[in-house]
Amino acid sequence: MPDFVITPPTLPSLPIVGSTQRFPIRRIYCVGRNYADHVREMGNDPARDKPIFFMKPADAIVLDGGSVPYPPATSDFHFEIELVLAISKGGKNIPAEQAHTHAFGVGVGIDLTRRDLQSEARKSGQPWESAKAFDHSTPCSALLSLNGKPLPSSGRISLAVNGITKQDADLSQMIWSAPEIIAQLSTLFELQPGDLIYTGTPAGVGPVVRGDQINGEINGIGQIRVSIC
Ligand code: MN
Image (cartoon, rainbow, N blue to C red; front, side):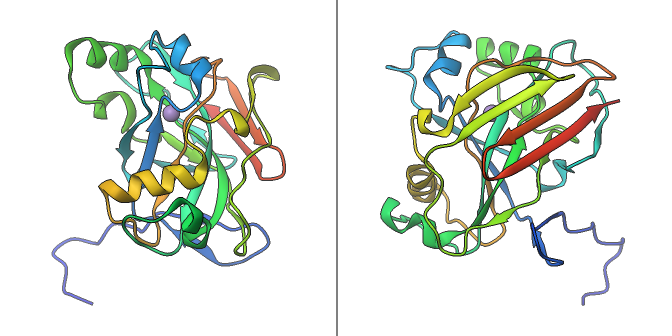
């Protein structure tokens, strides 16, 4: 180990369902505009506006059961429930048919967003970091190992705030499927073990305030619960 001049940061990681081992996080990639009904509610046209990629820092992860401090510089703090893919084998130009062999497993994540800052950034052509890549912006459940099985292509994905359902859709509504996302992303970046991919959110996004309890779920995959403090 090198003689570091400061204490090295802790490596962010996620628990794994049914295991004492953990999944170390290298990068967090995210897909935007991957469900047509959400593309429309954001004022875009799914026929014209393709899914896009952006990133969040690995240390923005919040574990299941955790608290998310209401972030500064926003008055429109939104939830986005998303399927998360965890990469265990790297590669570039990965064919969609091979994508599942690069995945360790899947989880349930929330892509928290300062929507007012995102709207300003979109209008002025500015980058999205302030809107998306802030501290505590990326809750994720424990990961479910796939053990080589295919990536999920259907299943109810939903989110409730204080027990009231806000988002309710199916993974089959994704514009790019999970294998297609891995294939597309790996043409832009060489994927590496430890990468997470948030695969986009369906319609129904909306604001939360201090004291709210968010519960997200994907049938057969898991649950994520966080409170806003
Ligand atoms: Mn999102």
